[in-house]
Amino acid sequence: MPAKPHLRAARMAIVSFGTVLTLTVVAVIALSRADAAAKQLSCGDTITTDTILESDLLDCPNNGIVIGADDITLDLNGHRIDGDGTELADCPKNTFCDVGVLDDRYDGVKIKGGSTRE
Image (cartoon, rainbow, N blue to C red; front, top):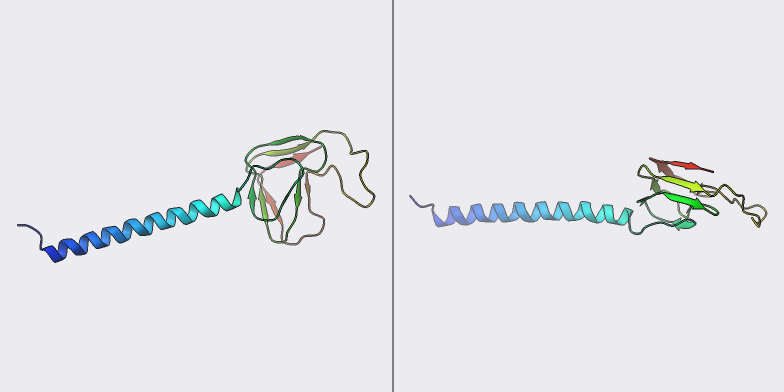
């Protein structure tokens, strides 16, 4: 016995709504992850939003990453920030040089999931 047309339409509406809802949730999750990893970092970059490191930063000649805002998280994502082992000769007085992650004035900063050295 065929389904009644109004029941069939109701089922299709429920399935369509569920599909749209699922796709919306997936898109929101993907976009929030994309915001955190908007660009590949290089030695000396300043970050002002939550950031996920996508690869090691090796042999940085000065500071690895510079923090530039309050209340952000730098997720090293299992990676390493590594200096070149040589002090910066012309480091200005009262300035930090050759630091893996430089945060000299911001509050609520979190750094997690990796290591720094040299």
